[in-house]
Amino acid sequence: MTKTRQFKLYFSVSNLLFKLYKYMDKLDRDINVLLPDGERILSLYVINCLSNFKQIKIHVLSQKKWTETRFSKKITSFNYYEVKGEKEWIEIIKIEILEKNIDVLFPVEIENIRLLSKHNGKFKLLVPNLVLPTVHSFDIANNKWNLYKLLKENNINSPITYRSSEFLMNNDYVLEYPVLLKPFVGMGGFGIEMIEDETSLINMIQKDRDSIIQRFIKGYDIDMSVLCMNGKILAYSIQKGYIYSSALYSAPLGVDFLYCKELFNTVQQLMKKLNWSGFAHIDLRYDEIEKNYKVLEINPRIWGSIEASNKVGVNFPYLYCLSSLGINYEVPNYRFEKCVSNNGLIKILMSRLKRNNKNLEFPKNTIINSFLTDPLPLIFNFYSKKVKKQIL
Image: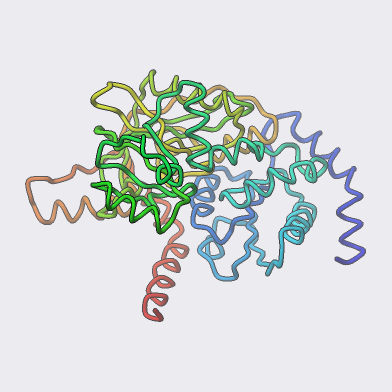
């Protein structure tokens, strides 16, 4: 690091005082936001939400040279760095904050969320506030076995769950098949297997013991998205999938926004126990036999349907910026409407063209406008995947 950059990094008190003065009169001027996850597709969703506000200037930092966000016309700057380690990445983020006069540091994916939580104290004099969970809370939420233990200790509804390695050593466990075998850490349905009998289960466990065995709940999936501060829910939406892809356990292509007091209270209790700050997407399942909602897992980050939430009235990325700046706001209401992704829209169109008995209706809300107004990122995404398949 050059001496000039060291000077910028460690002697920026006047810059900090200027920032503190700016936030005394709300969000009525340009705000610089830094996304340090430019190589991840979820950053593009955040960009689409933040671009609704002209006073927000979006700066992107990436560890990958060619990525979707680089081609977005909605960003102010894009910088790429080859990073050799955690320490170097932290220093690069600090330098970006100073050089771009960043007001809000906005980690999107779990790697940077945990990293910045771990090094939260190093940013105290650079940005007003990092709305992030503690490392302890993050490691509970991000690990399905740790989460189950917390749920059980606090009498929060969840499916009966066993640790696979303990199951092999304990003949007293009684399971009702089918069961789900899930990795300790994983999202988007990755690694989940439906097991129909004990022989198959034992064979699967012997291949990988770092997993949980979870009772399969007869019912339907439903989830709640939240932004919290110290366990208090600042914003939320509850949604249920109604259009799905052919991939098992994958996120829905279309969601129906609704409200359920019992579900809300369950998630509220969980967030308080975790003293959660930041984003979380809580997957639940309604148990048709016991007539209650059971917590399955937590994704401790932004979620894929965040643009859909924005369409019905809750712009989570914008609210995150307000929270980071210490600006108070009322818990926003949202409309109980449907919204589909671009892939969901394609599925509806195909259904209508086939004219089968399961025609899907066009919803009031879609996110296609993000593509039409800024097409290059998704065009790049499409062709990069096509080239990758050809290489493989």
